[in-house]
Length: 212
Image (cartoon, rainbow, N blue to C red; front, top):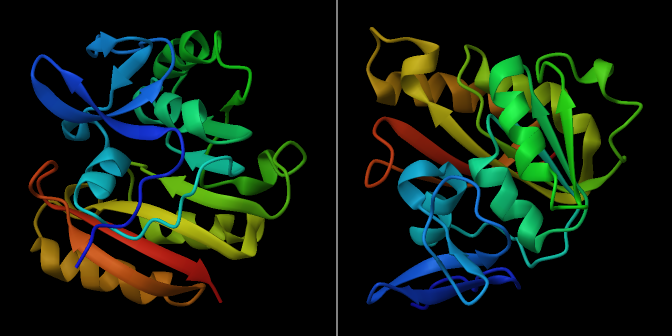
């Protein structure tokens, strides 16, 4: 069984004798570069881990993306390298400053200092019917955040969600946390695929879903 195709603009390139995922763009977090390409470190990126593990993300390149939990821009900068308009929502001011730096050379990356739990605060900015929502928020109620933001997603769009068990409940077994989160998620989405990301991110579950 062959691996899903990588999005256009994402390739496997050689860095120091090792083949790694890469996008074309200015470096952001000290990642290796070669011939205009920058290595995409799956150990620092949930979406990178999902691509490395072969999840069916549905990304083809050129999509309009809403990224929730952009932090300092590590992953969303790679997304903006191969996607279309990319709206990057981050609540914390300190990483948002770094996000602005990552956006400076990327005219498709639009940082928003907003709370992903309150989509009404940025609904006037984000395009309707985005092709993909990528979510990596380290807070309780991660599935709730995804359901609230489903309003932006096209009928045939994809949610690419990384659920961090310890952000929900540090005392509960990750499997129980994931089960509860998926139950809430199914109220607004059809779950297509799930996979543990432990090879790169301990106690994380990668989820691919489409809106109901």
